[in-house]
Length: 323
Image (cartoon, rainbow, N blue to C red; front, side, top):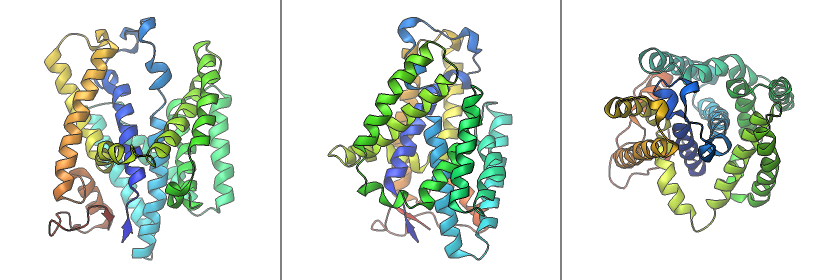
């Protein structure tokens, strides 16, 4: 039995918040050309867009390698367990894409996991470092961004686990790294505003790095307990919350009517904030009684091919364990 790393849950929940802000209009099926691009509201392009999906992708790689460790301790065929896990994620993503939103990211995560992440587990760490570097630099050299960066981010996340960084999160001083990423992100954002090739992707990665290191640093301050209370429940039920956000955005769009492309950034923020408040409340209540979110529980059942225990046996049962 392996203890959950609460900092990773908090980071995942934090990333989920930013992803929702970025996805409100796309989920509502808005044509990008119709978006409100007033100069005074251009800040999402520098603080949100392409800034949070790298965090989520990095954490997927981290979680994959942690899961491999757990599986290796429970079975002599751990990669088969991970293969099933990715195939089930692919099925969930395809259903999400076909029934709700064509912009689903789960299908991409599953395919990249099958093609890149799972095979990389047979490679030595140094080879994965080289492969991650190539997969990161190549898209940037051709001024590409978005999902083409996912393979590199998956591998980088996996390396954080394989090199033991995730086990030392609470012992690393994160402020210097936060400062470095933040300082480098400023000229990158300026280059982005001047449409310098690859600047959008580079600025996004650097800002994401500043967010990650800054959050990890803050988690070790007196604010840490409050930040964990807000974000960790969202992160522990990330899959459930990601899927339910699509339903809620579509419902709100239908209730509001009109063209979502005319929504101001304030409206988008209010929609995202309202959804996140509901999800945080539901996640907190659910996790008082259950170990896993509803979709996470089904995913785990399909992964291990046996029904996992979910409800706590007593009020004093531990609330932060991975079985």
